[in-house]
Image 1: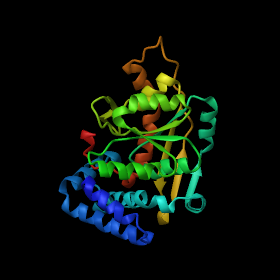
Image 2: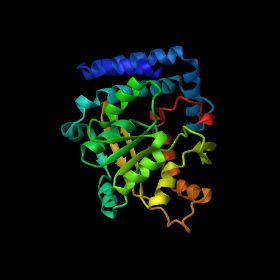
Image 3: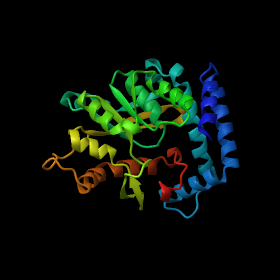
Length: 287
C-alpha cells in the first residue's frame, strides 16, 4: 500500500467516523492487500515460519498480520481524537512505568527501545500524553504531505520527531536535555547495521540504541505496546539496561554488539509471544 494512499486513508479516518467503522474499513482494506499483493503475503508467511520455527503456518495467521496492520493504521490515524487519560484508564494495562521516573532521576535521558510490534506509534503518544519528554526517531517519507501528516499525528500529544537524516546529532542533543528517544531496533533501514543472530538467523540489526547508550551513558528501556482482546492494549516497560562505561573514549563494534546482545533477546521473546503482531512485510532474510 503506497504512502500517498495511506495519507488519503488517514485523512479519511481522522474524520469523525465511529471506531467500529474505522476498524471495519481497515480490515477490509487489509484483506484487499492480502489478496492482491502476493509479495507481501509470501513475505509475511516466510517471516512467520522463521518466528515459529515451522515448515507451515496457517493462512489465517498470515491474514491476522494483515488485519493487525490495518488496525494499527486505524489506531494511529484516529488516536488524536481517542487517546486521553480516560482511554488509558479504561483500555490500557500498564506495567513498569515507574522505570521511566528512575531513568529521569539519573539525568542522562533514556532510550525507549521497541520493535515493529503491536502499535509502537500509539505507545509513544501515550507516554507523551502522560507527560514524559519523548522524542521519536522516524524515517522521513518522500512525499512532504505524507511526512507532515504522519509527524503531526506523532507530535499531537507533545512528542518531538527526529528525522533519521539528522538522528545522530538530534538524539545526542535530546539525551543531553534528559529526554527519552524512542527507537525501533528490529530492522535496519540504512546500511550501517551489524550482522547479529536474531530469531535464529543472521540479520542486520540497527546500532543506534547501543551506540547512543554507550556515548551518553543513557539507560535503555525496552517498551512494548501490544493489542489485547476486544481491542484493549497493554504497555510493558522492562527494567532499564545500563551501558558499561566507554573505554578510553572509543566505541568498537564489539562494544555495540555486546550491549545489543542484552536487549535483542527481549525483542525476540515479544515477537515469538505475539507473532501476528509483528508487522514486518519484508522477507526476514532481507531485514
